[in-house]
Image (cartoon, rainbow, N blue to C red; front, side, top):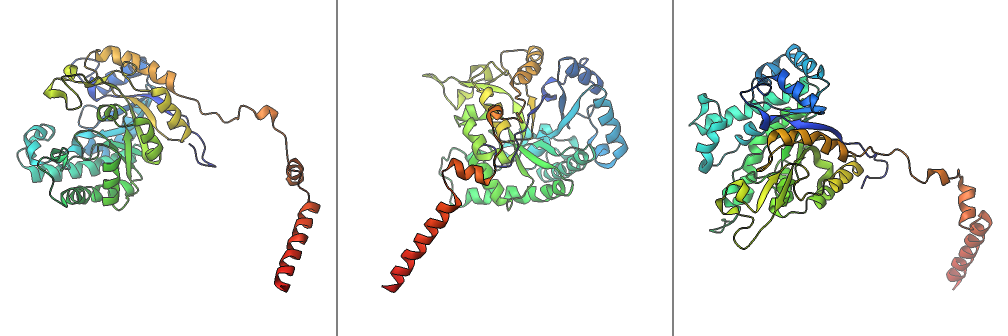
Length: 379
């Protein structure tokens, strides 16, 4: 739990990730519309997907403090804060295996499509812009994906050649180190969402990447327990192992219900047909009460940000229910011990009396000890 001298911390929230709600229809097609909508539902923070240019102009935000001040002021006027900027799509493009080129090209601007080298360079520069924009907006954390060079080998058939994994993480770190250095210059932590499809998809792969980046201090975690249920990974113990790295938090539920026909691999089914599937908060199997307890105990300084991904419930209902769900799970960290009323003031003499120890006893023991030592020496 919290280390000696480390204070517990109340998780902030509720926040909402806007990405899944963007639409061509009002109020989901403008920053003002989405801010008012989120605030009316009871949210206190928004996580902004930077690929949606009507929400933020990343080029301007990286260069202009005036623009950032105006953007932040507009959001604050609705009683909201920015929790983090998100570059999940751009971060994905930092590292793409050729097997996925055609599908991931959809995330890239037209100018770099069908050109993997140019696409990677664009993604790296975009990530650096997001670091500068985060700094100008007064943010300390940033949400993203790592990308993947090795994901196609996760189930090793044929067996992986010796040294392949080490080389893959070395190359991934080589691409990310210059980005991480810019985030360090701007005082912003990079929170990688630990996610299937990414080379950082569990605890072991996070550690591999951390080591490959020479334990870069800006390498941190966006904790989303829904992805761990689908992997059958202990999402509670994960917090015990990695709480010092958890700087961002998605509140998203999931469930895993295998049967005689399908399991973790999913049978290429749509989400609704899979054994493991994402649900709205409260509708799945995740023990959020314990998660919020542990994050509070460990003093994790995070926003609880609802991410809606559900194959059954509508986004409108998910959003309505998300704010009160998070609010009801946030624990106000106590600054008082429950049995303080029974406490007494003390000094060293009082403590020694409790233990039935006195200075006289101590001197007597010391004297006897000296006597034993002297007799042994005389022998």
